[in-house]
Length: 329
Ligand SMILES: Nc1ncnc2c1ncn2[C@@H]1O[C@H](COP(=O)(O)OP(=O)(O)OP(=O)(O)O)[C@@H](O)[C@H]1O
Ligand SMILES: [Mg+2]
Image (cartoon, rainbow, N blue to C red; front, side, top):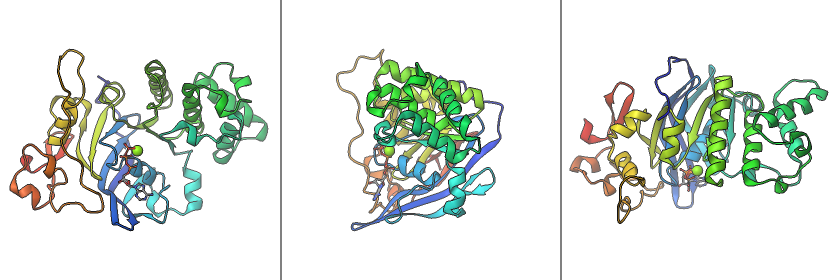
């Protein structure tokens, strides 16, 4: 398991009651519906949850990159380094994106432009955010590419994205992400398109880069194995909300929301021989038509009447470990 409980408790990012909605012809999609968490210096926070639960929308909101319309941050605060990003102008955000907070998006191919060379793209990221003399930009780009272990970086700078392997492209995207030494790096499932060996190398690389600069990392993944290896704390999302939050050890040893317990039970284990893997029955509710009470009620094995009447408050399970479930109140 990842080494947890670091001494450093300096908060870098604080998200408070964030809500991001999309207006669609079916109604208002409440993709993120009241999320709060904080991120400490040098730590890695994992975000897990089924497809469609709002992980990417949360991260795009942190970057203020929600397409408007149809989307909009309807309320909440995103405090980074004393600034509330929700209130900043596009001009002010331009200075913060990349330099203070950066995002590695889900698909490395779509985040690289096929018609520009790798060198051009890394240099461009550096030029936008850093005030360094023109002649040093190329040298800086080269250094960043070497940092992410691109072999023969100097000649690779002239390559186009399609001339590189998937793993290498992913590392180039990582290089762009770290090129301006952001305080917070968000990696949205950065390893799904990589094979297992390359994936392990990439994760190690991210960890090493983090150690070098004391960067804070938000790591979105479906894979609990990656959570165990990479993260200090975890937030479990369900239907636009965080249903459980705690250290990796809390979440693995004492999952307290029935959804977290079900997610963990659906992870295959090497040492247990099972005929059929456990899967959570049913589907999450549509985000444009959420039920009145707990969103998990229809799938919950321990549902009670009051779960269908009101959404549960966050209860404290232990120090730093919370879950929103009526069973705990
Ligand atoms: N531009 C948009 N217009 C309307 N709805 C949107 C838009 N972008 C996202 N959504 C909705 O927001 C919800 C959350 O989507 P999101 O992409 O955050 O899920 P996710 O948790 O990242 O899923 P995955 O694990 O598949 O990446 C989904 O119901 C999605 O349909
Ligand atoms: Mg996503």
